[in-house]
Amino acid sequence: MVGYEGKRYMKVVILAGGLGTRISEESHLRPKPMVEIGGLPILWHIMKIYSHYGFHEFVICAGYRQWLIKEFFADYALRTSDVTFDFSNGGDLRVHGSTSEPWKVTVVDTGRNTMTGGRVKRVRPFVGDEAFMLTYGDGVADVDVPALLAFHRSHGKMVTLTGVNVTQRFGVLDVLQGGEIASFREKHDSDKGVINGGFMVMEPEIFTVIKGDAEVLEEGALETLARQGELMAYRHPGFWECMDTQRDRSHLEALWESGEAPWKLW
Image 1 (cartoon, rainbow, N blue to C red):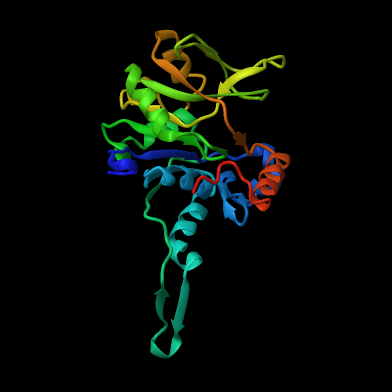
Image 2: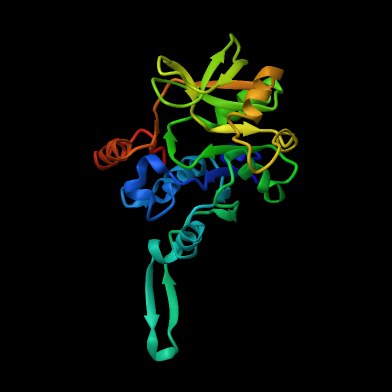
């Protein structure tokens, strides 16, 4: 795939199969990545970030109510274009001036109860033996993706993730000078500092490190790679937000409605 500034870019894998229990007001009806910000799923916003930089090929790791993700993309042209339904001619459908994105989207049912590592391993046939991007289906940021990719290619390690500075409830990174991650662990209540913000780059060897469906990526492969010196952090000082709760969703919605959403790079 030739993309931003004529460079060859890889596929983007998005984890979109979880239940989203902390935002159950929305996710009991649809997958968490399908919860809308500004009338469109947060999944769409994430894809627009990558597409802005020329990444147009996506592999969606679906699970919980995965058919809703498939239906969204199946109807995407109808949602974004003017259409004529000609019932006098057998119900013919004509799409006028389609504004659909230049995307190729593969939605993979990776299982309702599969853990994050297992979901990644299951999409190997759709990714192939090439490096790929990976991120979570509930986080948006103004990450400089080409700079992230350049950093990954500069150090030669297996995985790069984006480290963001927030007080949060996610996996905590101990980052050494130069970006190498000395340890990757689950958070403690007192933790403040650099956390895993997603927006990762992975070499295909990651598929051999992940053991199977029951493996949580963050507690399995990433911890293993940190111990082996194969996990690096690209430090992102800008905006990052995870839609983990209804309060988070309301905050993102307010930013979008203000016309000043920091992740709107397009």
